[in-house]
Image (tube, one colour):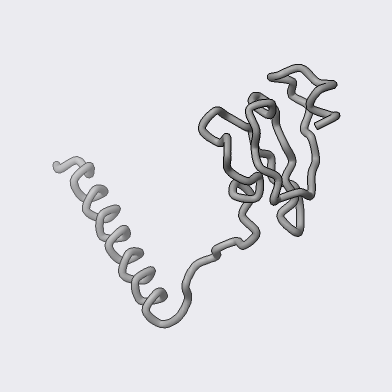
Length: 98
């Protein structure tokens, strides 16, 4: 709170914090917080809709890569084939006829 009181609202300074369980209060509006997610700091700009939530709610700790496996590979391959046929069809239509 000391850092918030010393800065002006809308200031571009990022306030780093490890306190993910800190509740957002109306005094925090307009400030940017760097909330630690376990690896790095995620910048969170506090707006009016966020009052009452926790800072950690806006800084996810897990990164979803995607589901793998046979089914995902088959879907990716099918999408590549469809894209290839679209490109070929577009090329044959744009080729001038003599």
